[in-house]
Length: 439
View 1 (tube, rainbow, N blue to C red):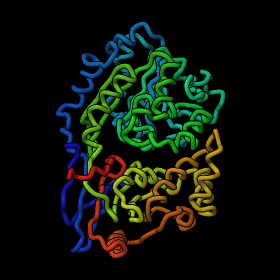
View 2 (cartoon, rainbow, N blue to C red):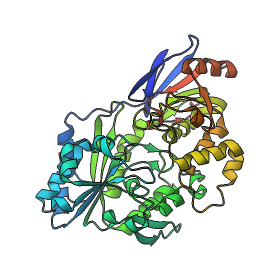
View 3 (cartoon, rainbow, N blue to C red):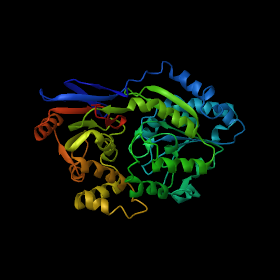
View 4 (cartoon, one colour):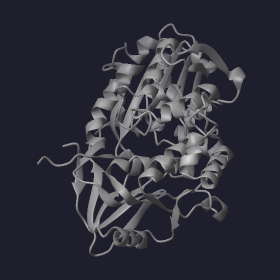
């Protein structure tokens, strides 16, 4: 069984650092869609030690990889992903130092892509270990600084320009770390994605975010076969040369359930194989009312990140149905570039906005997220419950704002005449797909 579907009258969905309780109409027939439960690792430290020392995928143990090396760069995801960095950064760094790499030649690099840097208390929260912050150089990638990047040329198949952060390219030992979860374009996050777009230059990232890739029907969540983004990422890894990855999988409580280490492609595939059956959930019907979240903190810090949760459930939303999204947006809207794209969406409408993108080889910064929102607007009505957006920002969301999520569900049921409601408490970490029951 790929996942679990329970029926209940009351349910809570992830919101901010907690949960938002739903009190739905008595006549509502609720289907709650969750990942299949994955057993927690009884000893996370022991599992990590085994991954690094005795069970690497397609590579020697970390201690052997580090032997004879003069420098190392470890990539970590930015604050938008709840990667348990606190569990593995220090053991990895200590292994490298024991193997002979000077600690002052080890860099932890935050793979921000085109996101803002993580600084101060936020950086401390992200790293999760005061020792690492005190002993090791921790820096942020800046995609806009041309001098920070090495030009590796273009990918052989699609000609994507490849510029990567110099600190990673020039390190003797290169390791990406991350969280493997569904990604609504690249199929799955983690592994190769932490390199590109994680520490790529803006031209590389904007090529990935162009309509040429975004509108490809195979560039969707949980799919790697024929996915043009995934294929380009693999080509970039091969152009770069030897690099490795530590991949994690966590459950709804953010506890570790799987960890893999080794050659970057092999170790990532091992994590995908582990989690895919639990995350990709078959559902026997489509729903006129779907209630979901942005998976809570940190993914619901901004409206920019919220859009991910608007796209992942579309396969089970009936045409013309209502998708109700709950996201705290505690940090507000997102970048100035994203706000400008949203303003164009509101001014032009979805189809005219999309028409302005199709001829571009390079997307404008952050407009791709607005393009993804258009996919949900094509299917049905999108509503947003949030407590974190100023009125000026609410005006350019491009969706319907609601002040009471329970009343919004009741109204959606009335509009459709269908009392069946799908609820996805963990938002984009769960990918439901329509699989009609056999006749």
